[in-house]
Length: 136
Image 1 (cartoon, rainbow, N blue to C red):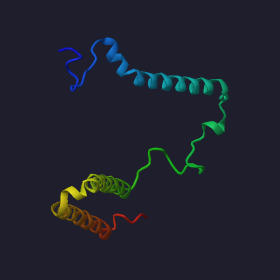
Image 2 (tube, one colour; image 1 turned 60 degrees about the vertical axis):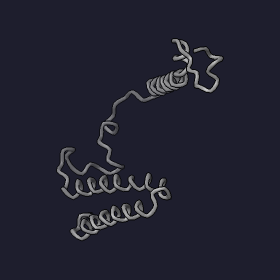
Image 3 (cartoon, one colour; image 1 turned 90 degrees about the vertical axis):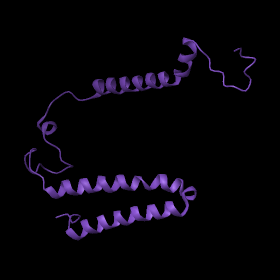
Image 4 (cartoon, helix red, strand yellow; image 1 turned 90 degrees about the horizontal axis):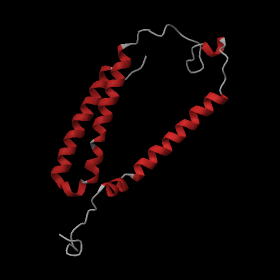
């Protein structure tokens, strides 16, 4: 099929040069990124301090002195709060697509999301009542 006959159809260029033209922006971005990383690493190596001191070798914990060994035990409460955060955060992500197509879904979509939010609220209230969210 010639290019002149296909006026209403999408003409896709063929050949290696045409394919490379489509990816030139991606290649350019990678090159710029590599140059920036190279400049930053070189500047750090040239300008950074080289002497090791006891202050530099000291453990840094947000400006506070160390409070124990690095392999200390954490409370299970810490992990529960982290897992609950991830669970509720992922569930809230489901609200965004629903909000975008809210008008197209109509009343059935509203009822389904109402049930979803009810279950989510019951789970949150259950965790709150058990004291999981209280940090001690």
